[in-house]
Each structure stands twice: as structure tokens, then as C-alpha cells.
Image (cartoon, rainbow, N blue to C red; front, side, top):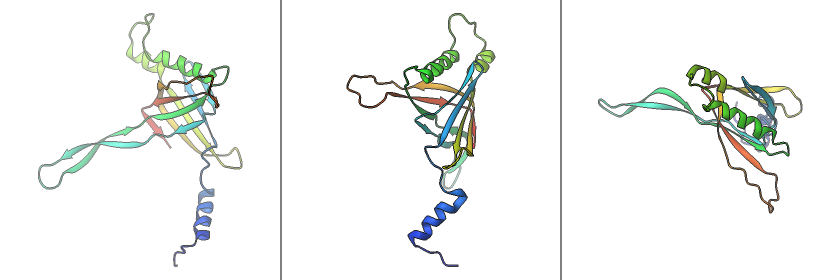
Amino acid sequence: MPVSNSIQNFRENVINRGGGPQYASKYIATMVWPQGSRTYYPLSVVLPGRNYAFFEHDIWGPIRKIPYKRGYTQCNMTFIIYQDWEERNFIERWMNSVVLNSNRRFDETALYTEAVGTIQVKCFRSNSDQTTKTITFKEAFPAQISPAALGADATAYPTFTVGFQFNEYII
């Protein structure tokens, strides 16, 4: 069967494939760690990239790259700062549990289990609340919070971005 190069044919293939494209604005994020859980509606979610670390095998001939370790970039979420500062407070508390303070003795296992959690990002269909995909980040924790600009001349609402580290993710 010949392939049609018409725009109409391309459009029909895109719309009909698996129910159409995923809408980028239909998602929620649920964060669970031992000291609490919350479901938020981030302004944006940047899903991580994925790569490998390679061993270069170059005994003779062309160099062969042999993958030996997987790697991920961070998952970044941008949040609106509401007047109750709920999202920022939750993430600040979570970050405070990651490092030791002067009142706790060092116990690497306890520290790890108290600090890591699970993050789920659920994507929805365009016209319903039916989930199309859930991305789960295991052994996750917030690793950095971007600066938030507050100013009298600001015309938009303030935001901040959180970079989350994790050990594994499942799509």
C-alpha cells in the first residue's frame, strides 16, 4: 500500500494513533515520603533524560563503547508560589530530612529510609480523568530548589523549580 504524503493523512495518523497525542498540560504529581505525602499540580514537569556510562574497549580496531552503568538526569518540577507556601514548605521539610542535624546521631540506613520517597506523575486523557500513563520515581528526594524572585515590579506569579534525584524510574 503506498504511503500518502498528504497533510490530511499525516493528521489522521497522529490523531488516531493510541487515542492521539498526550496533552502536556494534563498531569498531577504525588509525592510520598515517610513523613508525609501530597498531591500537587506543578506548573511544569520536565521528565528526566536517560544515558549510559561506557567502557571504551580499544585493544585493536575501532573503539567499541560498552555500556556498563545507566544514568539519569534529574526530574525537574516548577511550582507556583501560593500565599500559603504549601508546596515550598513541604519540599523544605523533605530536604531537611535528607541531611543530618545536630540532634541526630549518624545512622546511614535510618537516614536513607527517612529521606527517600516515591514520586508519581500521572498523565491524563484530554477529555477525561482517565490515566494514560503513570511515571514512578523510586528512592526519590529533592536535591535542589531554585531561587524564587519576588519583586514589586513583577507582573506574573512567582515560581520555584525543584530538582529531584532518584534511583530508578518506571514508565
